[in-house]
Length: 77
Image 1 (spheres, rainbow, N blue to C red):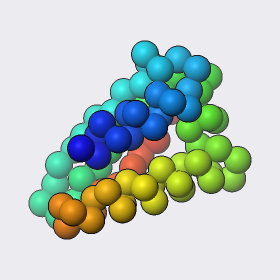
Image 2 (cartoon, rainbow, N blue to C red):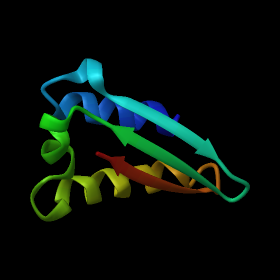
Image 3 (cartoon, one colour):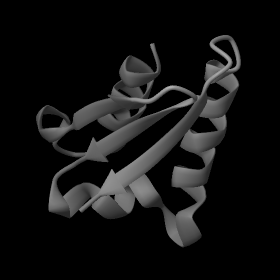
């Protein structure tokens, strides 16, 4: 569910939604989500002073409380 949520939010923010990729790495206690977007769109996903990235991480952690796992979002360039 978290993977689809991140992909949905990222596609809404960027100019090239077809280049959005979310890779999920499952661990025992945590899950890492790697978000990859077009180099032209990286600023749109991070936002000024990282505000958009922080907001996406907040939404993600709220959605992950059901599973009891920690979810980490990494934005790759």
